[in-house]
Image (cartoon, rainbow, N blue to C red; front, side):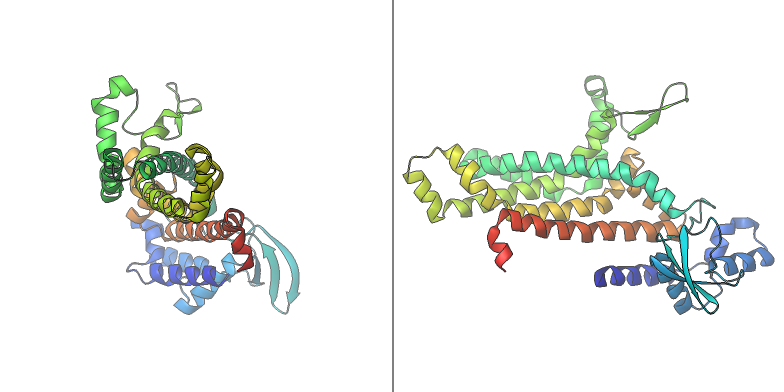
Length: 346
């Protein structure tokens, strides 16, 4: 909770010190002084920054305080909050509600939760696909690299993994889109751009296009794949030097059984750490990949929000990603205890 509070504080002050008037952004070129004042009162922009910060915390808090004054920003207006009134303290109502991430500036009347709800599942599908590619391929190549240490196959895998870590994702995305979506389109059948759901030729219904997932998932998985290969190789080589591995070999166990039964599980701790961090960062790092491939996910929405200075969408998206980071870190601690029983004793 303290981490989340710190993230909320940083996000609010980071984006609210940017130049520009949010009320003017919402009204565009058609504003007049009366409309400007009305919007500022409605969204609390006429208050000092410290008061706006308290409003923001109140909006996010499940248990929140709301004024009984219809003109106040915190009034329990129908359609604004999904809330249940608990009790009243003087001129203030105490309510139980879902976190309110406010409304989009660019898509007036549309809540940020709706925007995130429409785009996050697409990003989640992309991130899961990419991390699965990285895990399966990376663990396999890491084992192969460890078994053939210092041979040509090991060196070839190391070169490929180093190259994968060195190339920026946006460059890989452009290269893959051009090569496999344009130059080799007749052979691959893949498109340069496309999202998970697309309208049919008649524009009447949405259909899932799984082929559009292939290129962005591979591109997004290249860098974590390279990290998993390196970590798996080094961790496995370290485990191979342990006494219990030498004992297993002395007993005549096959190399396959030694790896599967004894070495692999003990070598996975650093890999799990890397995977957890990369999976969470994929939700944020998918920005350029989604934008280049036209994938309608949270990353692409963040780019569009940055272009239009849609601060509520940016703040809500960053906050959502931060919450996912925290949840994944907690989940990883549980996995550690399963992989290494000694962790429970610490």
